[in-house]
Length: 312
Ligand SMILES: Nc1ncnc2c1ncn2[C@@H]1O[C@H](COP(=O)(O)OP(=O)(O)OP(=O)(O)O)[C@@H](O)[C@H]1O
Ligand SMILES: [Mg+2]
Image 1 (cartoon, rainbow, N blue to C red):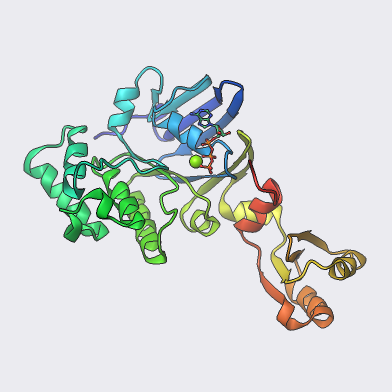
Image 2 (cartoon, helix red, strand yellow):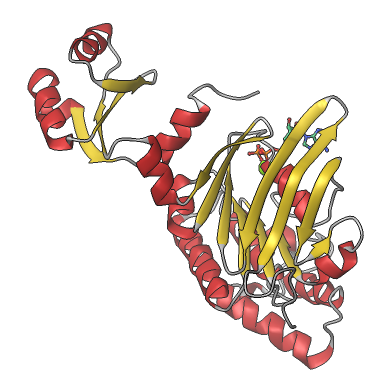
């Protein structure tokens, strides 16, 4: 299918302006602005209840915005939802496979929503089942699949219509490392083929590995935006020394030395540009076995900007 966007040469696949969604008195999404460019993998991060799923649901025309504008593939979500949906692939946060149908029929019936029938549809289903390692399970009932197998089936179901925009809401939650890497490879491959990806995840390594651009949300608002590398560089020192203690005596030493640090129940995280020097200083005082030097990562940034407290 030909690509058609608003601005030739500078295609924006998703354009949200002052986008809001309220559920009664709950302001799930509060006036956010963001753009996703063609062939980008765009990641939405945020603590539980931040508004990620609500945002992606508006993008795939599952729920209407309360206010603001939202254009997807150059089309308005309120006026042209059917045209948009035909060009999307969606893997929602909750699996919604049909338990009355087996694996094969789940794909075949779903293919019909995109007017895919006959031998071409069968070939596409076979190809995807082989690809995701579920071909041997094609006659199995959905209830006979493990959690990871269901998630993999959801993933390939979203690829049936060769979507221009793929929307993945926590695609790898609950998967083993092998299956996670398989999903990552799938995402990278479809991206190489020209698909734009909108992804939510709680795994910071996943976001760092896959996403070109990230948006960190909290309580319905955008609190940070940028490439993974920029977010780390702009919000954290280059290195972190982790100390496996949060004793007042340890905290006292850190304060006295004028070091920047954060505390969890069990650890202190000291940020430093001179990682080796800081590590030496701290391991001399607290012992090498209690100190670990590492590069700063996205999880450091996430915890710094969203805090360490659990959400409701
Ligand atoms: N259908 C709904 N009716 C009422 N409130 C809702 C509905 N859907 C979401 N909410 C509320 O909107 C807020 C945002 O929820 P949302 O599911 O978008 O968060 P999320 O960032 O996807 O969280 P998680 O990481 O837990 O999946 C929450 O306070 C949630 O309770
Ligand atoms: Mg969610």
